[in-house]
Image 1: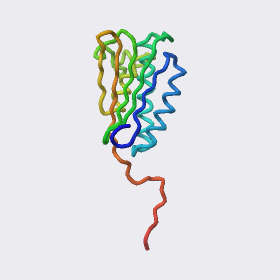
Image 2: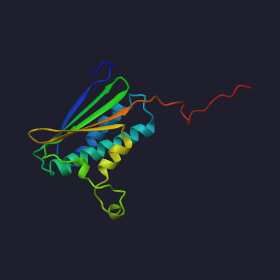
Image 3: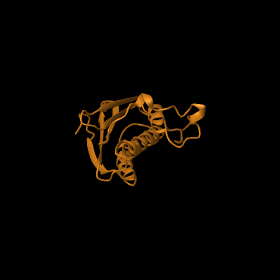
Amino acid sequence: MSRNGFPEIQLSIGSRFENIELVQVVVDESLGRTELDEDSRYWIGIAVREALANAIKHGNQRDPGKRVAVGFRVEEDVVSISIADEGKGFDPTTVDSPLEPENLLRPDGRGIFYMKRFMDEILYDFGSAGGTTVTMKKRIEPSGDDPRAVKEVEG
């Protein structure tokens, strides 16, 4: 249990794309307990999906015998999600920008871009025995008034 009463969640999944949905359900449920607004929760979910897909496809090379570890925790005002694969690792600075004209129509290369766009901080840890851990952080900024709420007007 983290200090603020949110449970720390640890999952281990096989390297199969179908398992992304399972993780997504757990993350969505956990994010729903924070003060994050609906849009922020949605975009965090996209970043998590992209990181998981990268771990499965690029990190573990879709090897169902390799695992992807997922960690979720809330500390103070920050949501932290880590995703670790058992692959060879990579250099994130060598990933081409999907915004370059020659890459606009390529189906790959958008995951890291989305993760950077939707999260406040992305950290990479490359294990000495292989594997990459991506830790994504998002500050919790309490949502203001719900624009869908009906407000009473004093007259």
